[in-house]
Length: 419
Image 1 (cartoon, helix red, strand yellow):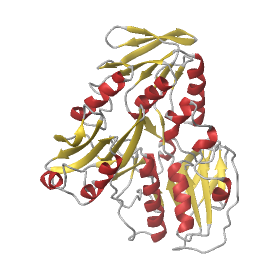
Image 2 (spheres, rainbow, N blue to C red; image 1 turned 90 degrees about the horizontal axis):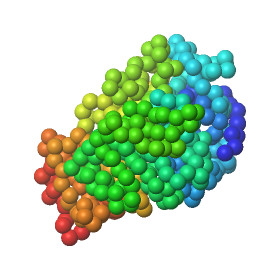
Image 3 (cartoon, rainbow, N blue to C red; image 1 turned 60 degrees about the horizontal axis):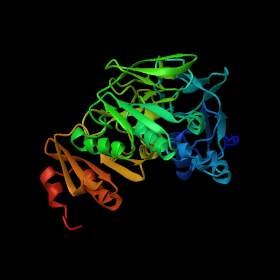
Image 4 (tube, one colour; image 1 turned 90 degrees about the vertical axis):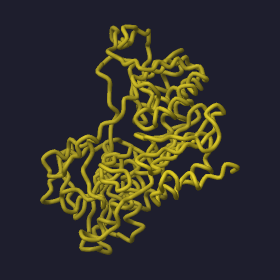
């Protein structure tokens, strides 16, 4: 992907006295922040800072089409040259944000330069959690370079050990099977996707992996890796070892918050993200956050929420930017219905709201045996999540119930068993 660089103008229409805005992060949230600024009529300078050498690109295909060879680097580009250049950005690619100086709203970069602005959008996202080893052959999957390395390994290896059966691990396992590799999938929890899907429903995905020839081992963690220069074996918590010359670890992500230490921007306990209020504002005036890095209070789910979802990055960035332009004391609370999807073994999994923790779970359409269903998830007498497998139209039909705070009984009354 080419890194086109444009220099924004400091002239143009001011909005609330704001003439310059800096976006720290050149991912999905950063791109949507820039687009939302221009769509709102902001004509001042917009500086976008990204530590990768690429323009913003789409990460979801990296664990799917990209690995199987059905996608090329160009297939993950989010905008063509014309659309991107129309944003008229001062683009700083390959530059890492090192420090935020709150009094000036200035961002220090790793090349010694600094970008000062009237408003800042923090969208530095997250990075893959890496296993504790330096051995070759052990990969994570977060960037285009990561995906290219795994894709090349798929061409020469006959089997792969995937550590972690979350969405990334599950998608890598599916892609590896599609590419003809033997797959062992390790998960310390009792079912796949345990962090996001209630185990009473998550058991369906246990069988989905096994139906497709995956050696899925549950309740087993990894204690270490062995090899001389390159990985040769994986040590398991049950005392067993697996021969492996290719390992892909899907161990979750760590928010990129280190550069904000000492700035006055608060960090959220538990979620590890940047602490925001319901307007996406941080504790530092004029500094907002969006995307994987932002943790904020959601009135329908209690506590703080931090979402590493493609749709959330765009929606939250739009809200953050519009609230930044509106100024303190104005704006719109961010109260989305979370939405996430995954493609595994040619089947689409969709999740609206939250599917864990839940105290009630019921399949309301289809059946687990047919690998085609819609399940309701409830907590404290309320509908909190809708999970679907191969049931896109039905899943989206129930989004309204989550946005309106619907009781469990009320949600069940909306179900037409014949539809």
